[in-house]
Image (cartoon, helix red, strand yellow):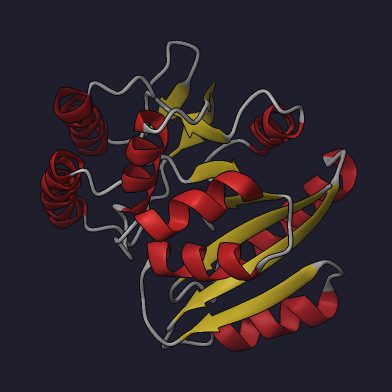
Length: 237
């Protein structure tokens, strides 16, 4: 059973070495499965690609995929489509979600009980440290998702997810977004088509150097929600 861990990056030359070292050490010690780490370089214009290639040469089970265009969704679609892994996952390069949640997230899929696993910052057992602005926007957005689609999963956009290869092969061609909305689109379509989603509370700490433009991303996400709802009404899925 091979587990892919994709790390999408854009201009992350400073944090990338420590994050890969931490993740590699953790998976070596606690990963009860075979694994690979894929650094997906999203058209970085700093030394990220050079640093990533150096890390791939330094650590076993680490490789690099380069994309000439930005977009987390684009990067995940490319890496997951090309990977031979049985379980496909990703996490943010800042490792904001506590890594100890990763083995149970993956093992819920390996056991065959679930098709998708998501880390959640919004369940009662979750613990988070983030600004009021991000907390407000996140909770408001997830309420909006539920109001649009009556979904049950709790947190659409936590950067800590996994999916089986079989589910990915069916769902990826149905998604259109190449950016931050990719997560929401994938989850909404998956739940509505009957895929089983494992909702796992995580401990999460905000990265103060985050490159996410919260308000702009939220507006793009609303447009995405409208598009997906329109597609459902047309029977596109």
